[in-house]
Amino acid sequence: MLATVSVAALGLALAATSSPAQAQTSWTGSTSSDWFDATNWNPGAVPTASSEVVLDTVTPNPTVVNAPGAVADILRVGPNNTGTLIIQNGGMVTNRLSVVHD
Image (tube, rainbow, N blue to C red; front, side, top):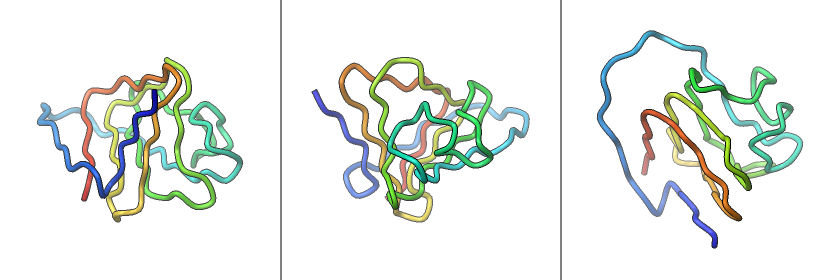
């Protein structure tokens, strides 16, 4: 089963309580589409449950989660209208707040 969250397909914002500022982890996709590969992220580490994650590029590779275990505190897809998140093959992303820009 393939589930795709695309900026053009879905606009979703979930309300949340305020939390302390956290470091931003941005998708670069420079190596592959694999969420779990640290070389695809700036600053070079896979996001943790306290990360603010920004997915705002599909070049050179879109973001793909193929297994459970992907986490973030805040997950932002497409703040500049270019991000995509593909969840497939039993993948799962757990986070406190999701914002999908359209």
